[in-house]
Image 1: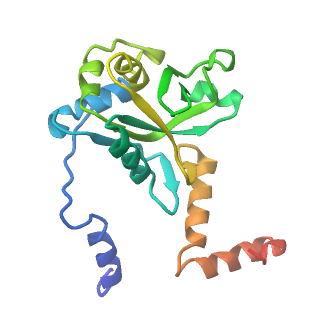
Image 2: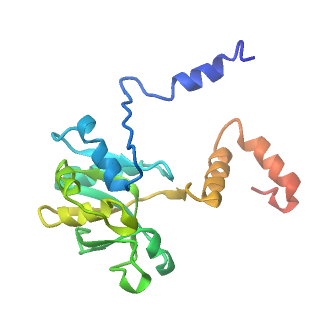
Image 3: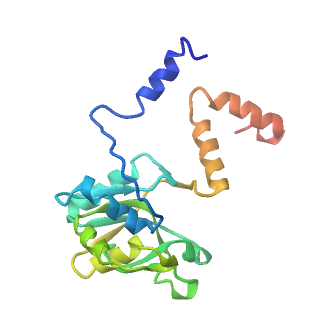
Length: 213
């Protein structure tokens, strides 16, 4: 069926960059994001900082979000969380952080009601942690929703070391929602050399007023 499809084979083989290895850890039970991060401790180790990258948040930009977090880490030596401004009615869907003038986090709360939110800065799915987060998660009990919340581990970490918020530059797509997933696919396709022109023609056929896309 796929005989001669060398371009498809190359695309699959090139997904993983040279020199990169994937290790897989099963969480076992859905006990929260904090528990999921803790499950990776044996693979990650306690010797150096590491990224946490949630796939349902897709972020595009001239400079990658992880690179922006790393720049902050290189300047501070501290854990860094990606944040963006969110509308008040959305606070119950995010960890929300209050920061000082240097973007050092003063407090962080998991999914607060709008009246209880410490700011309008929501934490999105990109983190750079020092290994100290693992010990905090080890002692973090059940939080919101009966889960081990990563936010609670971060709040405990604040007692021992600084944690910074990084308002990233880029476009975030919430691919955990149907609309966000569709928006991401359309926007990325419109930037793709092979897909952009036929997709524009398709959209224009559906809606003639979109011919100027």
